[in-house]
Image (tube, rainbow, N blue to C red; front, side, top):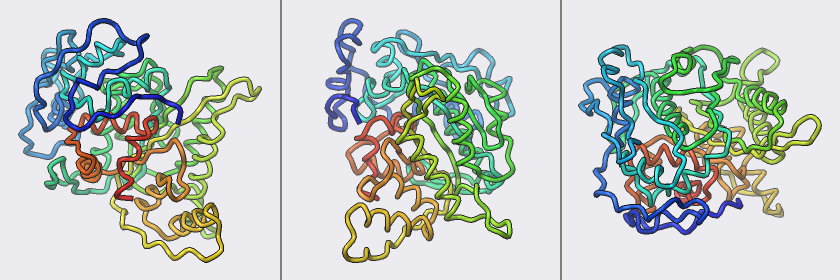
Length: 394
C-alpha cells in the first residue's frame, strides 16, 4: 500500500511520537501529554454496553459516558436519554467529524484510546473514504452463543445479532468521528440506510431484522452496481460482518454448496479490490478496501495438506487456498484470505473475535481497550502494520 503513516512507536510510548501528521495537517502547538490510561473499556464503549448493546446481564459497568475533553469530544448522552430508553435504545451521542489533529487528539484522550496502537493520523486515513457497513441478517444470527470479554472471562450467553449490533454501533460511532462521509449500511435482504448512525431508529431496525440466507457475493455486487452510477473517484472501505459462509450457490438438489459459495464471494471480493469500481463510461475508478469481521464459532484450525512437488510459489499458494476453501472451517477460510504469505487478498483485513484480537495485540506489546480494537477494525485494511498483527497466529 502507498500510505505513509510514519514509524510505529513502541507500546506505552504515549503521545511523544504519536502525533506526527504532515505539516499541512497541523493546526497549532504540540498536544499535551494525557493522563495515564485507565485500562478497561473506553468511555463511549462503556456507555453503549451499559445501554443493552450486547453487555451481559448483571454487568456492573457504569452507564456514564466519559466527561469529554476541553473541546467536548467525549461522547456524552443527552439529559434523560438513558432513563427514556429502557429497551436498549442508543442515546443520541454528540459525535461529529473531527476536523483537526487537535480534535482527534482530544477525542483520544477523552475516550482512553492508546495513540501508540492506532495513531491519530492513522485513524484519520478514513476521513476522505466512503465507508460502507454490511450487516449479516441471516437466520443463524439468532443462535445463542457465549463469548469472552477483554479479560478472557466468559460473558453471559446472548444471540449473535446482539454482539454484531454492539460492535456495529461502536464502529459507526468511530466512523462518524473520523470520516467526512456518511456511512452507508446494507443488510443481506436488500435493505439499506444511507446515513447510518447509532441514534437512528432505521439503523437499529436493520441490525435486528433477522432471517434468511447469507448472499454475501450478491450483496457485494449490489454495492458495486450502486457505486458505479456515481461520478466519483472517492475510495471505498467496506466492512462486512458475518457469522459464517456465503450461501449464494446451491447444488442441483437445492442445498447450499459451501465451496462454490465461498468461491463466488471470493471472486467478487477479488474483482472489487483488484479492479476497483469502474463507472460504465470508464471515466471514474474507485479503489476498494475491505474489512471482514467474523463473529461465528466455526473456526477450527485447518491442517493444510502437503504441497505437491514441482509447483511454483503461485501454484502452491493456489493449491493451499483451494484446499481450505473446500474443506476448512469458515474461520480458517477467512484467515486464509487474509494471509499474505499464502496468496491472500491485498487490501483485506480479517478482524477476529475480541479474545483473539486482544492476544494478537498483547503479543505485539500492546494492551488495547475495546475502543482501540474498534479503531483497528476501522483502518486495518488501510494500515499494513495493523493488518499484520495477526500474522504470528496465522
